[in-house]
Image 1 (cartoon, rainbow, N blue to C red):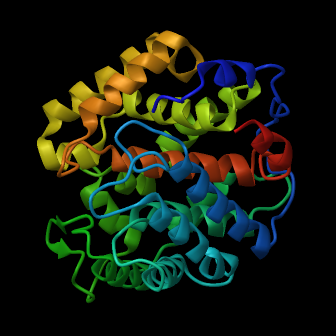
Image 2 (tube, one colour):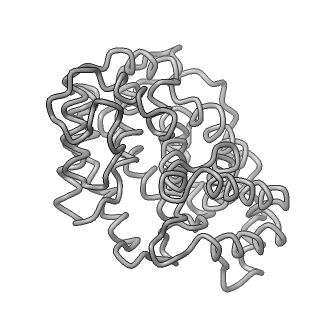
Length: 322
């Protein structure tokens, strides 16, 4: 997490390039190409930021490197370009299949599950619509076919996925409920599933506002992403950690994220020092304290900011201050 030249890091905060104010309503319909760019960029930026406990350019896992995450982001292009014209489940399955052409490990299943409904909503939204309203319609229109395609994608990605959800096992291609209903069965133990049944409550109420606020205050993009990650992690304990280590451990990690934010997070020297400490605490050989679901929610927040919040149009200026 630490940068080698603190003076350079502080210097790039002056003068800040701020994201323009945004009214919160849809401003234009995105093309398939723009939706693909938003999805790819969201995944690449999320993986590139040095977030505690996650893979980044500065930190690999024993079985996964940053380059594999970057390649996985590129792989999303073809499937997300067509997200407006194919069902959500098909987008999920195509994206996972394409990712498997690039990497042999699960790098982006959670991201794909979160981004596919958002991408379809971005394609369908019209002037005056909000992305959250439109994604709500998309989620309510999910079908049994979407569930079967998503289950096939989860089986192909091979992470254990959402595990066994009551009587409906995600590895069972013979789903008899809609994808939204299947997610409802897992909502208490998986934050991605909860987003499906709350119209992306964490993304729109916590992650996206935190990201826009940080960019509006002139944070460098990487710091804004870390700030968003900490905001999400402190607001809701990471469900991947909870499934691996239990709810008490997940809650402790959430409290540590809140402590880092209270010290200023990436915007202060004290916060950055505490980020380094938190990163060390979360790293172990088995990666059992990796806040992976929070990383996925961070990518979803980035997608919303890129697609609806004006960030896609302002990327050239923003990325000058990574």
